Image (cartoon, rainbow, N blue to C red; front, side, top):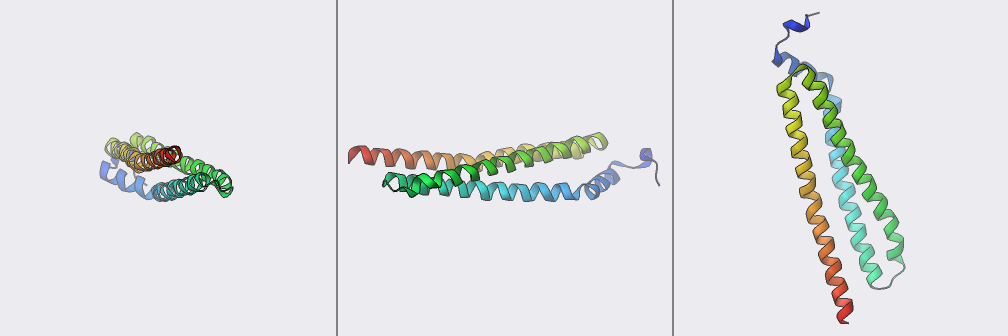
Amino acid sequence: MQNEADITPDKWTKRIISENHIWFLMSFIVHILFIIFIWTSVTLFIVAAKEMASFNITGFYLWVPATATLGFGILFWIAAIAQYIYLAVIIKEKNSKLGQSIFVLLVISLVCSLIVIFPIWLQVRVRLIIRSNKSIIS
């Protein structure tokens, strides 16, 4: 076995990635689940709003799964961020460049998450405002 002082940063990078490849895979899967759950919850909220606007009782029943799905999406988002922080802390101890790149990946992930969430939020708000204005005019 090699002494840890003899290992170059490139070897540390390969070793850390090989030891933590499951964490990288899990982070990717969690992000995919986050996107799926957020889009599903937004779709459910839109359908629920349409049903409630037409005074259909089904709209009220859709709020529960929509809220639960949104909650799971937020939990997956928090889990992905926690995994990136874990990786960055573990890797920063051994290799500062790889740790910094994981922090950059975390920031990119947060920005991408906001890019995914903001248009959805904006679309829901605009549809609800348009729907409420139509019902007021009628």
